[in-house]
Image (cartoon, rainbow, N blue to C red; front, side, top):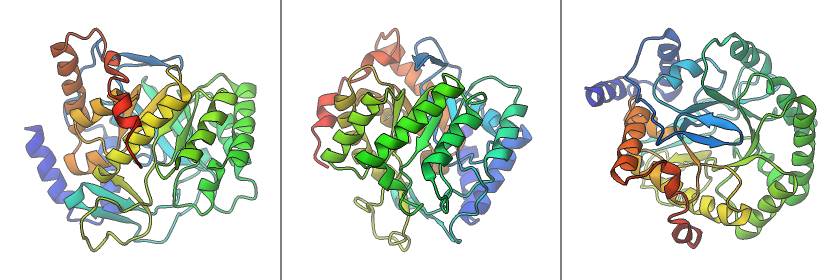
Length: 357
């Protein structure tokens, strides 16, 4: 039944432009109408990292609920956690439309949104009004025209430290000019020093760094060194890619922006494993990029992830996808006789870490 519902919903939403369809989906989630039956999490899926208890390891990536409008509705779909944002200190409209392009043949999306959001104040007010539980992270960014982008991240830490389960520092979007420069060693060292100092002065909330998949070996070395030196709590791998490798001919394939979805799976998973080798076994890692099934979610864990996120996969598979993946994860753990799904972590680390980029 859920599959038929998903197919009907996709047919109707794909008749609209992507941003209109997205707005309607947010409205449906805010209404409280159950879009599907959520999966029940079991002890086999419970995950504890960075001092946070996650009922299951599947989360929704940032980018869907930019303004914290529907975190509780999203949690009801079966996600173990939801990450809202990216949120910047001041509201900004982002890049001109059109700025989202579907590539259905590849199960992919190109976006060049540019951190469009309503700003800190509105997101903060909504999060403070929440009465539900659940793990909700906040993804923080910098305004495009900010005179001091690192100060924007410091402000994000101070403002959301008391309402978020964790904070994700997003320096890897390709749609804000110059933002990825913060991944360079010198600038990253300053960013992380200031962000962690702001965190320590506010509350002991976990801070994760979200990185791009378009890194070389030297870039990964630098990021790993700074993560360990500054004692950052975790890593999110990865954001969208500027590469167009692996996609078919499509009128939208030449559009600028970040590519997400199925074509990103191989590279993002290889980067995940390579970073696991660099940061060691203790640092929490969240893996995303091309997750659209139980098997792709499990493979992220085998490659070194503690948690997994998705977004584009749900665009194509519908709102029942998280529940189906969570059920699939639990069935797998039960069939393999695992006490906890985390037992498979790193089981294919060598395979993925040795993949060429």
